[in-house]
Image (tube, rainbow, N blue to C red):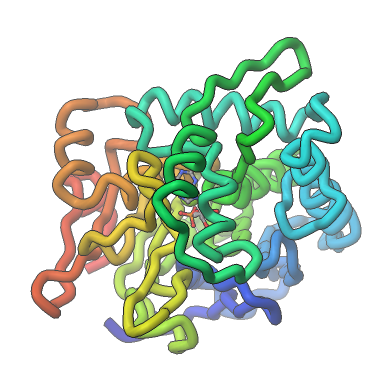
Amino acid sequence: MKLLSNSTSVRHLSAGRFFVTAAILATLLPACRRSEPVKLLGEAQGTYYSILYFDPQQRNLQPQVDSLLLAFDRSASLWVDSSLLRRVNANLVDTLDDILLTLLRNSLDVERYTQGAFNCRVGRIVQTWGFSFKQRSEPDSTALTAMLAAAHAPIAIDGRRIVKDPATELDFNAIAQGYASDLVAQYLERQGIHSYLVDIGGEVVSRGTKPDGTPWKVGIEQPAADSLSAPVVHTAIPLTDQAVVTSGSYRKYYERDGVKYSHTIDPSTARPVTHSLLSVSVVEKECWLADAMATAYMVMGLDSACRFIAAHPGQPGTDAVYFIYDSCGTMKTHATPAFDQLIIK
Ligand code: AMP
Ligand code: MG
């Protein structure tokens, strides 16, 4: 599918090592004197952010958004050496702030809901396979057994304190960008802005419509051949008062001896997933939930994910879901009926 006409790509890759999973296109109004969107571009969480909003006062809220995202990184980022999460993982502190408490509670809820496909205790596994800090070593069976134990060791929240096995390391990367998008959206709401599109690394929250009453439009990226390919829109959907997140292995992987290792870990094996799913997109009210469920479906694989959706009608994250998968070298898609209705044909 070619790029939408009359659209402006708001996606750009971060200068760093980390790439986004979805290309986002926001269709802007033709230049219109009284309804120009304010556009903020920047970097956070090792990726880009792109925020569009309509504000009659045309305020530039970039300094406030930047400080919100900086505070988020200082709490939940694994790439900031002294972040609270890094110190919790190093067992230096056990008192969580509001951001980590929310991420942990939500992660444990999704873990229960997805019967363990989602698991925020995979931190050590992710690092060992080399996705966080480029240590590209293949773990031996002793290491795998130890990491499996740490990823399934009991964890509890006691007030603001986390009680965990010292070997357990948390990784909220599968949910954090979505939650950060939610927090930026909440900030805009508090400023009286009710028409916006917030995109942090491809995790997108929309609110309202554009001033002419048309919905925002978001493009789902075609899975790319390699991590550096230019993004191409595969499918476009309208979005109003909802979030959409795409999780995929095609940009975030590393290759060794001709084998591509996904950044998504199967918590039951402590190994990267290897099935045919190229990407999963989930539409939900809250971006953190769409983010978490997209990752969980990537872990399950197409067949298990479809069974899960069939077994949870009307439940969170199961209504509008879109799978792009490889079938003997051919790219195929599967959409739930609600997602199929969204697709702009
Ligand atoms: P996403 O791009 O949202 O699918 O998030 C993928 C990231 O989440 C990975 O790079 C890991 O840091 C982390 N992760 C990998 N596997 C899992 C899993 N099974 N459950 C939760 N987080 C995971
Ligand atoms: Mg995710």
